[in-house]
Image (tube, rainbow, N blue to C red; front, side):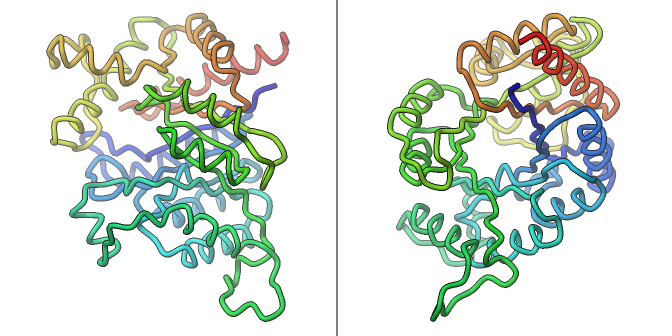
Length: 331
């Protein structure tokens, strides 16, 4: 059986508030636990009026406290924004409060624009210290050693599982070199997916894990009818287009036809960037997920879907879970 999980950006739909968005995430996480999802991850984004997951570790703790079994984590923490010790302390605290339920995915991008990145870190350097920062961060989760001067308390000895996130060959190479599980951002940047997957699997060296473990990110828009599923998808298409054109905002309401709000060239761009997607009625989504699994042979799936209506979002993830559970029974 391939485990399946959810990536949530805590979207703020148009006409809604951050508080309502966070409540929707708690509600969806509780439903995901009931449906058999393995993990519930939040992504760090800043300076966005459409995303409520900026304070990612706080949100993880909030959701972990209102669920019982599902793993909760970051997909991910954008490490250039933070000191490794502070991340270790935050996730060490989470792991102490919720043993064996916390994951830490690490990304190299700032998760925002450069002006906001400067506001986050205050001091920006040209040097890329990401690999060293990852190694330093992981060391804080190891058991304490005699004479160790800098310690993460809580954190030391918690062995929080660390995942490498990426959308390029850099992340694949680093994950392989450090022996980390690897999640690829195929839900919005799939161009390097096949090359990165080959690099990761062919050059993997045992480290934190003994064998490669690859997670494929997939957009899912499922509904009882094909037409409704495609309509739901238009919210994410509009949000992605708004981001690309420099005008991000709350998650737009769906439209009946994306061509009413996007040009043919823009639609072609959306179809290319968001092509790792399953969209349609339950049978269509099941077949498309099967095709993606057969093509990329992931060890895990993580599903995402920016859907304007919280009830429709819950229904979409329920349909996907039913398809994947039925697939597992048939194998």
